[in-house]
Image 1 (cartoon, protein in one colour):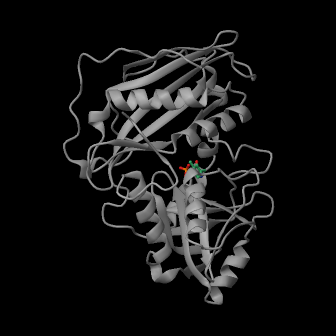
Image 2 (tube, protein in one colour; image 1 turned 90 degrees about the vertical axis):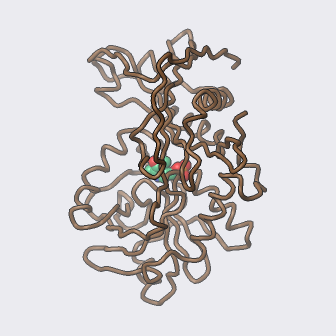
Image 3 (tube, protein in one colour; image 1 turned 30 degrees about the vertical axis):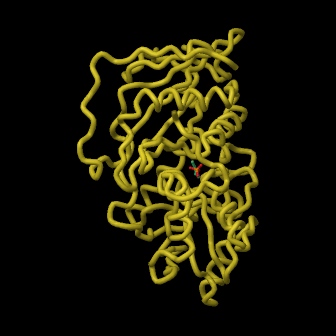
Length: 357
Ligand SMILES: *Cc1c(COP(=O)(O)O)cnc(C)c1O
């Protein structure tokens, strides 16, 4: 797809946040956004970068009623020498098409999607913070726009990309989290939408998260939707366990989101000669490994946190502490290596970074 992207810059640029330590996450947006429309028969068209601002939608807009939408999340990083790097952006555009296919949304051209991200980041590059641990979060999303009440795929869609400068995920250093093993609610089942990044999955997870919070836990560990037996994900992150020197992560069987950080971790571990296995792992097996003293590390992986160590698990009142509630050596090495590659501090042996020029 070769489509021109028109650029209409704002006449009233906003003040950029002064203190990168106070950026937080997802609260501040840059001056511009990318937009493109889809009409059945015409395809994707009218690619444009315009000032960031409210959308005008009819109350009957389909996405508001039936949730036909997908999204992505990735980051741009400033390097020490002032370059701007994206991390494996083509993977996000490939994945949005996997989500699109499941949600009956027309695909976008992967290369054009990456070009759109680059063009927008370039326009707002002065918004990218450069303090340690900061980045520019990129949120591409597509939603159904037909003004219509009735359950069917929409004939029209909007594809939008917005940008949000974000602060360090761990302002006080990497802290292991307390996780509640969820035995009542489920996130996804095979045949459902668990592998797609679609808003309904997150709406469906809120109740479990709220109840876990009430009990003093940051997130939930999801078990499979049929037997409540096999481990799936932790919050909206993929999950890894180091047991007796071997690293195990649940295999992708349709109910788990195929994380790009997950894929990067698997590649890195293999390149270091660490044994990595993708397979089903039950919560019983995990607790047994712990009681035998073999559970060495546990961590979640995702774009926002990169690596999030798990310090404590509570499964039906049965609590275990992992690695004395400290980040493990392997988790730390993975975090340092991935963030090092992302920010241009370490050699990018795998060719994962893409420069925005
Ligand atoms: C986005 C997401 C992940 C992590 O994917 P990354 O590509 O590593 O950011 C994991 N699980 C869920 C449910 C997600 O939405």
